[in-house]
Length: 345
Ligand code: GTP
Ligand code: MG
Image (tube, rainbow, N blue to C red; front, side, top):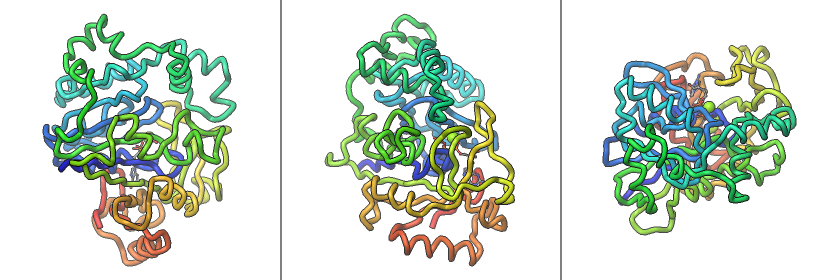
């Protein structure tokens, strides 16, 4: 049996999916597979064994936590420069990523014209988009004008020398691995077909969407699929005209250091805990009170500074988690107490 875990966000991204993915893959080896889906508008933060911080936009975080095989799904969008820079940096740091990573030839290539098209459209100002060209690349894909990774890799030595990708011309079979991690990006509330439209991203962000982008069938014999929904204590939205945020407050009011976006360094908007959003995200990911959909509650240290980087929760913090569990009828399997500390319950 292959255990397939899908990590998804419950809010508007930056929930700490990277930290949960890092925790889950810590002891994985080359019989395991870590998959990244979607595009480089998301940066997943993880720490390697030496405590170095990595913010990965193209490669699965298991690259720095394990010897797992690495895969970029066919339904993904690839910025070649971002990918090449990341693989080069990771190789230099000793992670042998170019030997472990496979990119499906059907993945869509993001081209300069996609970044230009989003700029010309004013997408960043209009809906608070990150403007990384992903929406425009997807639009081209839908209109059958996009270039695939397979096409460019053929004529492009840095990618062609990585001979692995070609093996994935056929569909990937998750049952060839002991464990599979599908690292979803962004968050439920950014889903294209949610009530938050149009201040959303250009795809849906549920487990079923990520599984489809990879080509994994939850009903297939031989796989156990489960979902970890990641929610942070104070949800954020990107700066600007990025749409509704329940109980919007400020970092100052919360007594927390300001959080900025990784690439553009703009101050993120922050809101109070929004339980109905998390409830909606759980339902959208198929939660029915069973144990196949669990929660990871991250950044509990922002509410209870005394648990910062701690492997144990205080009574008060634990009580908060247990009450939440009861109200949502959902097992809180993981609690994040710091950027590199996840408590299993
Ligand atoms: P996107 O897919 O880009 O939305 O991001 P993500 O969900 O992977 O979030 P990311 O890994 O970028 O995490 C956001 C920030 O929170 C990073 O700087 C993490 O190091 C940090 N972080 C993650 N978990 C915790 C936690 O439990 N406590 C604290 N204080 N920081 C955390
Ligand atoms: Mg991020």
